[in-house]
Image (cartoon, rainbow, N blue to C red; front, side, top):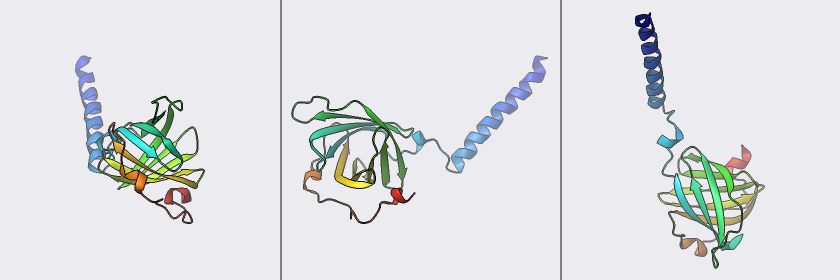
Length: 157
């Protein structure tokens, strides 16, 4: 009886392997395989809305992220851990927070990410982030990036 089961098991394994190879060939790789370098720890500044705080994002390759914030002077936490989801299309990276209707809409450039922060579709601040534990410096001098009269693409979806 065991000799009959072997070909069935072998066919199931072969089918699974063939399906995985086909998915990779047509670009259906899991997020971990093509996350554009997004996964990891990011240090974030939101100078217009939260000038005295530093935020940390822990971005997972599966499209999720966690956010913590601390007072830049004391290092004390300012919020519980917030959660969200992210998507990447080319250089356009969007993070959507789950607890509040915050959306970070920006451009990813290597280990830098900068753009606009919206709350309920209204522009509230610019932001900038650097991959790793060191906060970016350029964010403080940058002008507000978006034209607030033009709705972002994600809002039209």
